[in-house]
Image (tube, rainbow, N blue to C red; front, side, top):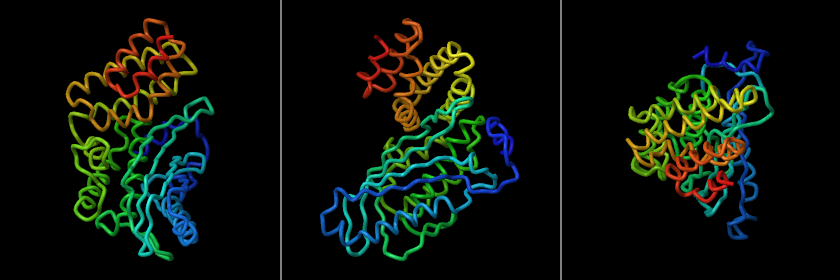
Length: 300
């Protein structure tokens, strides 16, 4: 595991500095709440935002040490849709995890998820506590879920299946939560937390984890050195995903990849040869049909 950290060769400083892994930003919107809920809960929502952020950033999620500039950027934007005086809150959450690209100031989106069942209970003055071995409440388990999911994909992008310790934690967490909490979904639902988590341990879908390493470390990190080779590499990755999709059509891990990467792939292949762009369109429109019109930009 320690060797994975040394792959961050563009961050040369302060291995001795100990710090938490995540740099989390939480935002909460009350636009869809009734006016009385917005006014009456303003203090609650401000404290909730602060408490969630402190929980994510103040906890150590691994045994690795991170310098401040190495921290994994995790953004969680909550749109509250219902709130009761008893502290029952319903929300839609957008979760993004970002990764720096070697030799550039560019940050690549690793995860771009929408959770439409981010429902929990919170009352003023309530701390968020979490234990890997027990289910405490929905809020703490959901926060831990997205922390571990972000770490899984980040570590996988720097080392072959480097996020394995976090995959195991996710599997344990979802097994505990699905019997006690709400909104975790079922394995067959590719948009659910259960579906995404199951794909990470499914042996038939392990090659999708290798895709994250190849895409980011082998090709994207070297884009500035040899863009033509990187573009050809991305076409090979799309070919690999097509083979994976033949075994498990529309799998959650495939959906997660294109939810994060569709716009980036279009941008990266913008200057590819016409034949390469045509081939990319064929792959992309088959693997990610809901974005077919966006992919037509490759056929300019």
